[in-house]
Length: 108
Image (cartoon, rainbow, N blue to C red; front, side, top):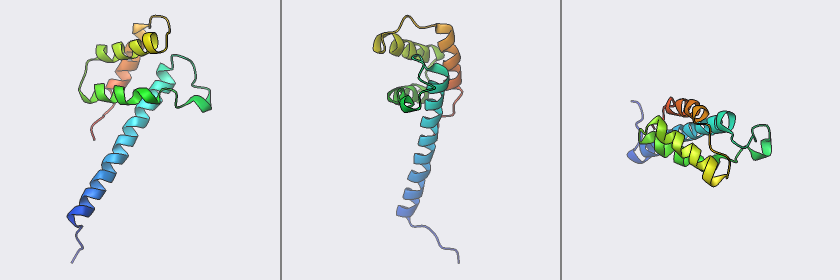
């Protein structure tokens, strides 16, 4: 007779699977922000690879709510101009990045 997992053990395994999936999603968003967005050019500075991590939750929230491409473009443009104090964002470039982000499967 095969052993069956108790409900508490099942919850632990499910949470663990969800946590792994959430980590994978976060890493995917991180990679796109660092590799493709990178408005301040720190991709080649290993010590700064966590520079954009504070924006991952916001991107995820938008993606999980099935936002439009324009909403992601606006979010990234706002970060660039208002948070970072950079010149007005190139919306064409941001649209390409938004397309990559929207293509991610963010379901847990």
